[in-house]
Length: 178
Image 1 (spheres, rainbow, N blue to C red):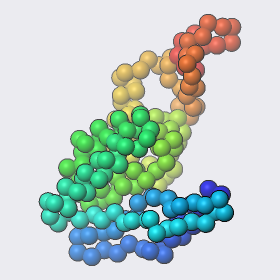
Image 2 (image 1 turned 180 degrees about the vertical axis):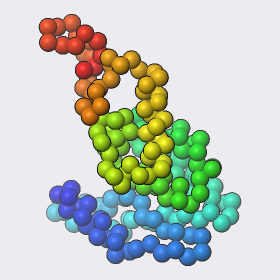
Image 3 (image 1 turned 60 degrees about the horizontal axis):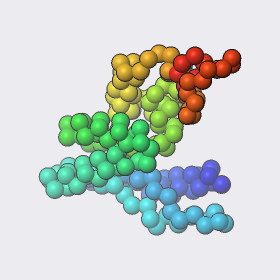
């Protein structure tokens, strides 16, 4: 069902291609329409995100919208990491940087977190994104500086989460959440 919904959403986006006029570019935000139990999709709620850097008012509205989207993702770790990074860098971004940021903000939370922390290898389209690369560099640097190696998963392996991180058993690790 989810694959069908994503395919329909992508088909709708490709039909409504973006156009460049003067300094305004339209990019579609990844908003889901209403999904009924019979898998009918309503795309009328899909609103474009206008990138208009021509005057201060529209620039401020765009920055506030992107800052809100980066701080209110519903995934606490990403709220903190992305929100802080966007707050520090959004005022120095040009139009291409903002497009890259919109692409990163459109990624799914669990996948984005695994890619940023090095648990999984990101796809090529995400790896070449300059915003993703900068955020990943910051996350990996913070992990190297502030976490002990025995509490981290090996690259390519997921973290095991739970309340019993330090077990004293025959088959459990000595320390950490592995």
